[in-house]
Length: 220
Ligand code: ZN
Image (cartoon, rainbow, N blue to C red; front, side, top):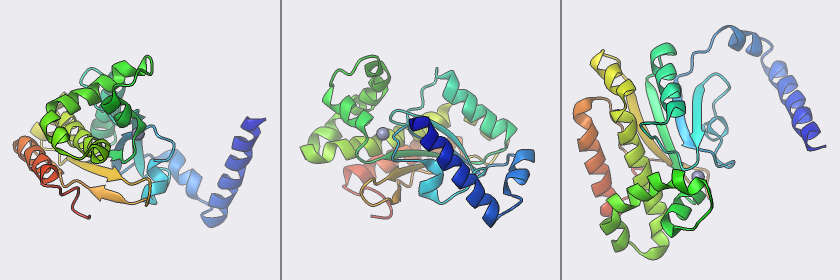
């Protein structure tokens, strides 16, 4: 039975952790104090902890198809509010990934069912940047839209009431945008990190200008 594989894998993992650090689970049981909030894609190839070399307890995670932040999504907003106001997280990461099926579908306009409604949000990003996407080579458009989507979702996080109130209350919340490469396992920083109301539009416009100039990240 497939579930047996999951349970056996879990037992082996738990035993391995305890062997390396006997107090690990007892420490985590009594306190959750993650440093990061991760908003990423549901894609099974982009697990937040594994690709960042972090442990359980380090990263508070929200994932959905194509890492979208919508102002009426109570699920995502609740995660954001709980992370910032209750857990005291100051580093929020929006992470997209190259080869994202959700982004490709949004670009192609292929009908997949109910999820088409969710991907409309990514299509809105494509419409917003239609001229830039049209100027790119066809084979480069999916990855360009993936990067533009991260930039826009970082902006959306910054414009939520949760982050706006955190900033006005003096919190040092910093919102970052990363893109993960499925082909090499490397995270790219889109250099859109924003830590104040005054920076939101400036950082967004600078990031889009860099992408328009063909600069895909600070590290490549
Ligand atoms: Zn994806």
